Length: 310
Image 1 (spheres, one colour):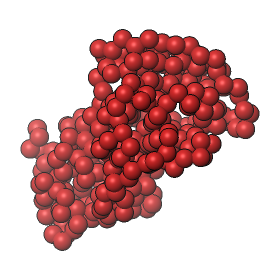
Image 2 (cartoon, rainbow, N blue to C red; image 1 turned 45 degrees about the horizontal axis):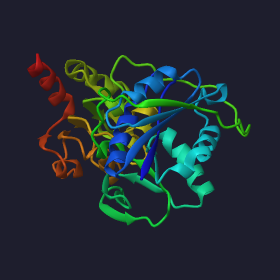
Image 3 (cartoon, rainbow, N blue to C red; image 1 turned 180 degrees about the horizontal axis):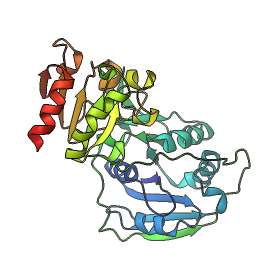
C-alpha cells in the first residue's frame, strides 16, 4: 500500500494542514508520498521532502498550478492515481475543492473529514455536528479521504530525507481561470494554527464591543474568533467564524465570551484542550463542554481578567 498526500502550500512553504494529513496517511499503513503541484514551488517540495515519514515527493511544476486551481490540480492527481491505495488531502477549502473531483472521476465514494484511522480500510468521522462518530469501512480500491487536521498530531517538519521526483505536469484543462484574491491581514496568529483563541458571540452586542476582547488577546498572544451569530450580525469579518460552517479549531486554550454554545459552534471547537466560558446565563450550553466557567457580565469579567494577567 502507498498513500498519496496532496500538499497544501503557497509555492514557497507548506501549510500546517499538510503535516497533519501526513500523520493520517502514515496511520493508514504503507509508504507515504506527497504531491506538490505548483509554480516555481521547489522550496515547498524541499520542505515536503524533510517531513518525517515521507518516502517520496512528487513535484509537478507549471504556471497554471500557481494559484491552486482545483480543476488542474485534480487532473494532476488523476494522472498518477493508479499507483496509490489512498489519496488524502486536508479538509480545508483547498482539499475540499480538489478531492471530490478526484473521487468522481475515479468513481469512488469520498470519505470526508476523518478524525481517526482504525485500519487501512476503516475510518472514523464526526456526523450530526459532531454529536455522533460514524465508523466507515470502504471497499473501494482507492480510498479518497479528506482529513480533519484537529484529529491528528502534526508530523515532524524535519528529520525526513525523501527523494524528490519531478514529473511532467498534467495539461492545463482550461476550465477555470484565477481572477483575484483578497487576503485578510492580521498581526495576530492565524485562527486554525493558533495555540490560544479568544472568541466572542452574539452576547457581545456589537462589533464595537469586540474591542474589549483585544487586550485579553494581546496579553495571551491569541487569535480572535467568533460564533456564526456574531458574524451573521455583522459584528466581525467572516474569516473569524469558528464552527461547523466556519473553521474547525483545537487550540490549547479556547476562551468563549458571550457565546451561548449552539451545537454548530461546539462542533468547531469542542476538541480544544482547555475551554473557558464567560456567560451571564448559567444554563448556556457552552458550560457543558467548558473546563472552567464564569457566570457573569462579560463587560465586567473580561477587564478583571486582563487586570489579573498584568
